[in-house]
Amino acid sequence: MTSTKNTLPALLLGTGMLLGLAILGWFATEAVERFKGYERTVTVKGLAEREVPADIVIWPIQFTAASNDLQELYRQVATSSERIEGFLGEQGIPTEEITVSLPAVTDRLAQQYGGGARPEFRYSALQTVTVYSQQVDRVRSVMDDLAQLGREGIAFSQNNYQGQIEYIFTGLNDLKPQMIEQATKEARQVAQKFAEDSDSVLGKIKRASQGQFSISDRDKNNPHIKKVRVVSTVEYYLSD
Image (cartoon, rainbow, N blue to C red; front, side, top):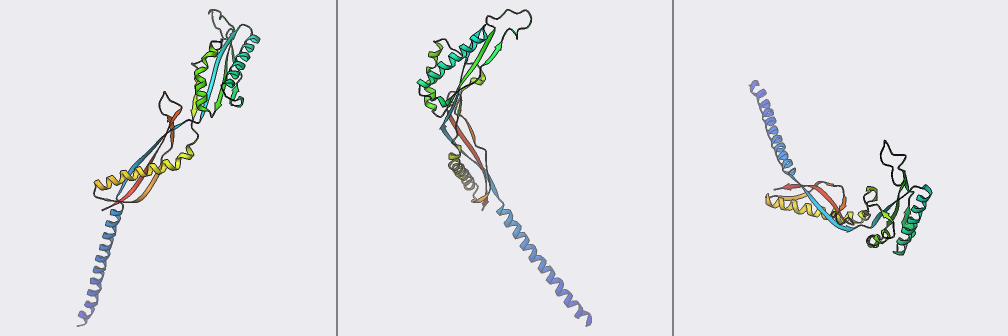
């Protein structure tokens, strides 16, 4: 009789523990399944592009001069520089947008090695007159007319890398909010299409990252027109 009384509480305790473990296991399984379902995600990219005109132009005007007399060489350089400045002023480009650098002078005789032929002119100079302006369209029109100074005897240099024209767009901060919004909307449209095709429901954003903005020439023939581009990467939750 005593044995039966001792066994009953132990049996009830064991049954309760088993039942508790079973219930706990069910809740754990349900929680994991819900967690896994909630963790279904899709990662998409959204692109935003704009074409904008450059708002600054940097135009290095380079010319060369040569002479056997160093003082005469400097006189030639000064005369040509003044003529170019005057021409630019006549075309509506103000003085404060024009910078004249020091000429780069080369002594060809000092650089001559071996028994090569003596150069016709001992000294040569490369001079740069730079236009830095926000009047992009006006400066571009002046470029087409610069050839008339060549007919006056100024020898322009066209092949120097440092003489390449540069166009800059500085209004990126004004475009950023609109372009980020556009890229995010496009990413959501892509995610929504994926959700529909997979019989899922598109949820909230899990994480998002904004790519770097890039500014490039629209094409090699129109460097004054810029293409602004940004790609946003967004990860969304999916549910059944």
